[in-house]
Each structure stands twice: as structure tokens, then as C-alpha cells.
Amino acid sequence: MTNRKRPSKRAIIKAAGGKCAECGTTNNLTLHHILPLSDGGTNDKENFVILCDEHQKKLHGIYKKKSDYC
Image 1: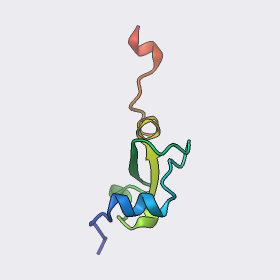
Image 2 (image 1 turned 90 degrees about the vertical axis):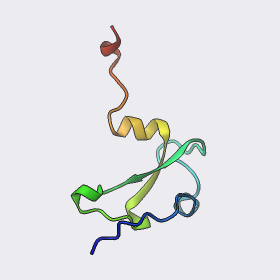
Image 3 (image 1 turned 120 degrees about the vertical axis):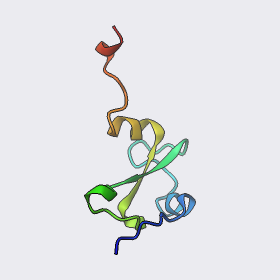
């Protein structure tokens, strides 16, 4: 059975050195599943990467293209 219970955010961030994996900032950190639960990923701490809010949004394509604003 897949582990659906997420470990504490604080514990994962501490284990990852407390920095965004992309830019190294310590601000606005979030957990990101490396392999999504929907694709068979787990909530094991090894399946998370720490990202700042900005890199999380970029990864998921949340930022609009500049041309979308015109």
C-alpha cells in the first residue's frame, strides 16, 4: 500500500539543508513531489525536493508568457 501520509514539511526542509534546490534561497519554501502521487509516487521523504515558491510555479508552468499579457 502506498504511503499517503506526508511527513512534516519542517523535517523534510531541514533534511534538505533548508534551501531551494534550484536557487538556494531560504524564503517561501515548499515541498514538491519528484514523482507525483498520481504516477505512483509516494510521500516518502526521498520523493520530495524543496523549491521556493517561484521555482515551484515555474516548474508547473503557472507563470504566463509575456505575450499573454498583451
